[in-house]
Amino acid sequence: MDTLKHHLLSFGKTELNTVTVTVFLSLLSLVALTINNNPLIFAGALILSAFFIWQTPVAGLLAALLTTMIFGEHFSLLPLQIGEDIYKIYALDFVLAITFVCWLLQQKPGTIKLKVFLKERKDFWLLVFFGFLVFNLGRSIIWGSDRTLAIATFKNYSYLLLYFLTVFLIESREQLVRLLKIFIWGGILLIGFVVYGLVSGYGLWSEATAGLRYLSGLHAYYLTFSIIILLVLMAYRQYLFGFLKTLFIFLVQVAGVVGGMFRHLWLGVLTAGTNLLIWLDFKRQNDLLKIVLIAFGVLAIVVLAALWGAGVWGSDYNFLQEKWFQAVLGRGVTLSQTGALAESAAGWRLATWQIALEKFLDNPLIGIGFGQKFFFEYRGFVDLVDIRNIHNDFASLLVQLGLMGFLPFLLFNWYQVRDLIKLLKSKDNDEIPRLKAATDVARDKLLVKPLALMFSGFYLVALFGVFFAIYLMFNGTSIFFWTVMGAITALVKNEK
Image (tube, rainbow, N blue to C red; front, side, top):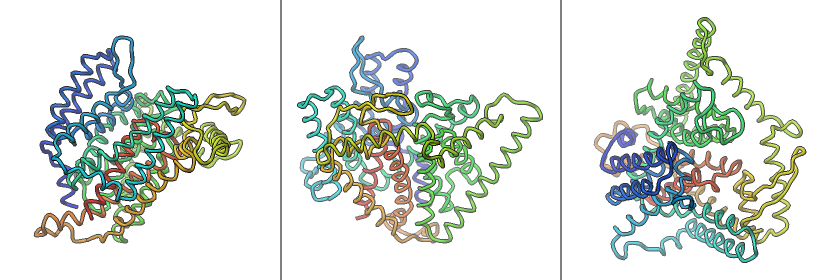
């Protein structure tokens, strides 16, 4: 673990190229956000980025993730625009394509063995799943569905190809740690958005989602990566920035996720934390629980003192006026409401899922295809809903692809879970900090369990998102899902 901490704080050529590409992409996003989407600046940023991606191709993937963590849909959905014409090929797509081409051109002849993917069962089933996506695209176009919508649906699901790119690029545990480094430092940058939301009373770019949000949904999701990493490190008593600073960062990030008001993220993080406790030995369980209890005890004292001070001297800050607490408690209560009392968003989901079940039963074998919409009435309002946007990716895939298309996706996930459990069963070692004379290979072997704990946590949070939202349908979340899936496979292959 001391080796992991060292790697997370190290800075080399790959990190430098990642930061450089992120700067170019961030400037592109800022210009498009504040001035206009200029095609010359668009092309210039990508050309300059390509120069540094060529030096270290993995920097392209890492920079794409980091820029998305900061700007969310303002980068991931930034399209190519020439004059008045807007093409739904995004800056993110160009960066990923450049990354793949740079990696491919640097491979020696014969080193890429595609047969390997057919031998690995989960890779095979993912390729079968992609084949069904292609099949459904073709039949949806032929049978007269909304062609534009069908093509867009296929494109969004096709971000699964990022899984294979991740497996190609991440060939060592050092590369895996670089991915974790992006999640950690990206989470630290997002603290600025958390503070802004707590002070102003609304999260920056949170207006896209109805209701009071102190942090946008995407930023709240991205923070869960850092929270899980810090939890694992604290369980092993490894504090990246010292005990107090690490606890402060952890608590602010937790406040951000809570303030985002996204209940599936709350449940996801709680489940990831429970999973962590299950797989830790008794001593580390106690250590982690003590640290978390101390952290939240200190936070409670600080908050109460701040509220008391605000009452004495007066304050205009939203957080100190108890609005944050009232909003969080009100949102939390909705988790227990059912039936007619169910909160509108939850009720809407249940109503659309019921309609989706009826659509599935119309054609359970091969599904209804892409580009389909349906009318339904909810609480007196008639709404036209795209079948892919029913806030349950599992259900929407099942309805669109049928059992034949959905089963390969399910099998892929089953094999992922199986491999993760094998890694989580790896023997832990209490003597990690003392192994000063151990070889690099021996020391890296001891990182398997902590890394598996982190990636299993990422996976659990993503599963809640897939079940209660559209994490596979929106590129700002799907790229993280498929990157994590690829990283898990890379970790398994590295262990073998």
